[in-house]
Image (cartoon, rainbow, N blue to C red; front, side, top):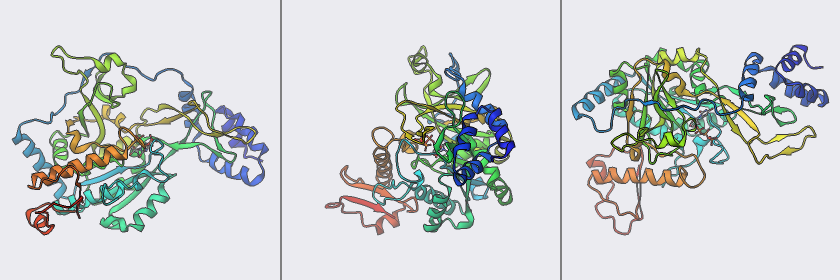
Length: 456
Ligand code: UTP
């Protein structure tokens, strides 16, 4: 017999189909499903089922004022001063790296956590290794420990944990790496009912990157940071290996402005590029998702012909530690995404839907921005900072990402006086200190006959 409290919770939240299903299951499968069901917070389920059941776009916005942006070209003395402030904060050990890697990576279709995907164009290093080594290099450069926090989810936490252990935490030291699993939430059909992923399991998915605040708190990262004297959290996404995990200039701008949460943007490739935009809606600075803007709005131009919503968000932030703690306790909004979710029907057959049949609910990390003091929005260069791995092929794929990584390293070599021909593959390890002595040791004076340059 299923526990009466659980039955009552299921019934009051419209999950009668699950109560009926439970009664038909054999005891061990029923026990497994009951265990999972008992973990849900049914007041939250009631709320989410209601949100998921609502039709129509969430919140489409009309004309709004774009946010002021610190442009890429700004006075060199101001840049130098900000970089200095950032470097001092890093050197004083007050900055942590935080990589969010709890997503499902469904578009990439890789069998395993996305962070384990081998992206290094020559080395085949994983996304995690690239982020870890950038952080280790920054720690060496600034002479301070930089702890490395990773958001995982229940589905990939064990695999990520063993990946870090097998790889000796990529040299960061196990004591400097902390994984924080995010919460999962059930998905719903359009009537607000749970979806069965298997006869003994309800479909759940991670609660969105906005689950990061709670994950940092529940995973003990915020306490760990307080113990270590960390004040600033440098937030990056695991699928963008080009971005620095620790950027003295960005951290410096954030500190100088006394900001709670700062963000990086870049010039959109074209008006329809699928990036969120920073702007003022109802007097609040927030990120407006591309799906909430009409095509006309995306194409809007100013009198001088320039694109009105010129800058797109790349989901890179610096977050004040104490602000993150506050956000862990704030009820940030939930957003609904319509997805195709394979399920089992009442006969126990597995169905692969052709159309979106389910609604996932998620929180977004940037929904904290309206609550942040002095939010900074800073422009960066796409070529230096943004090459996400989202899709298996085409735009934002491993191929475009590797090309961007190689192009960046080719530019770094060229600045050091070595011009590699286009048909020579180039990769510079984040741990390679690109100075004249090291370059001389690498023996790159004659490149003839070489098809690759790999500096480790
Ligand atoms: P995306 O939603 O763009 O990518 O998340 P994804 O979840 O990896 O892949 P798809 O959408 O299923 O194809 C952007 C970043 O936010 C993290 C992801 O790991 C990625 O680094 N993220 C996303 C989380 O950590 N948790 C989430 O619940 C969602």
